[in-house]
Amino acid sequence: MATVLITGGTGMIGKRLAEMLAAKGFELIILSRKKTNIALTQVSYAKWDISSGEIDRHAIEKADYIIHLAGAGVADKRWSDKRKKEIVKSRTASSALLVNALKTIPNKVKALISISAIGWYGPDTAQSLKHGFTEEAPADTAFLGETCRLWEESIAPVEQLGIRLVKLRTGIVLSNTGGALAEFQKPLKAAVAAVLGNGQQIISWIHIDDLCAMFLYALEKDTMTGVYNAVAPFPVTNKKLTLALAEQLRGSSFITMAIPAFILKIILGEMSIEVLKSANVNCSKVQKEQFNFQYPSIGDALKALLVS
View 1 (cartoon, rainbow, N blue to C red):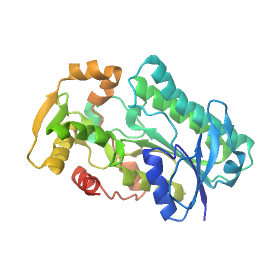
View 2 (cartoon, rainbow, N blue to C red):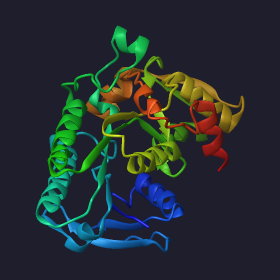
View 3 (cartoon, rainbow, N blue to C red):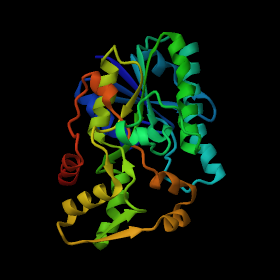
C-alpha cells in the first residue's frame, strides 16, 4: 500500500486523519520533533526540525504522498507581534523545508495536499452573503488573509517539480477532542449559551471527519488540483450554532447571554476581529468533484460529535 508522509500529524486534525488513513491501509510516516504515542501499527516516526532545516531524507524517499498540516495554532495565544510572526513562520518555513527537500532528495511523491484556511477571505460582502466566497476571491489584507496568502505561496513551488498540489482552505473544524467546539461548550457548563457580539456573523464550519475524508479524497483523486474550500454546505450564524449546541447539551435548561463586541476586544485583542467576522464560504467546487459530506448540517454534526 502507498505511504503517506504527514507533517503536523500529532495535532487534533492529524491524529484523526492518521486513524482514517490507517483504516484504509496506508502506511504512515509522521514528521515530528519527538515521538508521540499514536496506537496505530502502520505509523512510524521521522525527525524534522524546522528551525535547523533538518528533515529525514529516508522519509522523503519513501513517501508516495505528503499531507502538510504543520503550523502554530492561530487561536492558542493572544496575537502579540511576536506571536503573529510565529504563526506565519511556522507555516512558511515548514513549507520551504518541504519544498527544498523535494528539490534535493530523490523521491516518488505523486501529490501534496496542504491545509490552508478560510482566513484567506475578508468580511462578508453583499455578493458573498448571497453566493458565498469562492476560491477565486482575493486574499484579505488583514493578518489572517496575509498569513494564508504567504502560506499558500510558500508551498506552491512543488508544482514546478511535477507534483500535484491541492490546498484545502479549512473552515472552523468541529471535533469532540478539542478546538473550537470545546471553547463553545465552556460557558454551557454554567448553563449559559454565550452568543458572541450580535450573533449574526456567519460561521463556515466543517465536521472533522468530513475534513479528514476530504484530505483522503484529494489524495486519491488525480483530477483534483489547486484550491478548494473545505467547509460544510450549510454555514450558520454564531447564534444558531450556539443555541443548537446548547439544546443538544442541556435541552431547555440554559439562558442565552450576548457577549458585547467591546468585551471580546478587551479579552481577545486583535483576534476578536476574526471572532466577530462574518464569512460565508462556498463549497460548490469540491462538490463538483463529487465529494459527499457525511455531515452537511450543523444539527447532524453536533448530534454525531456530542454522542460519540
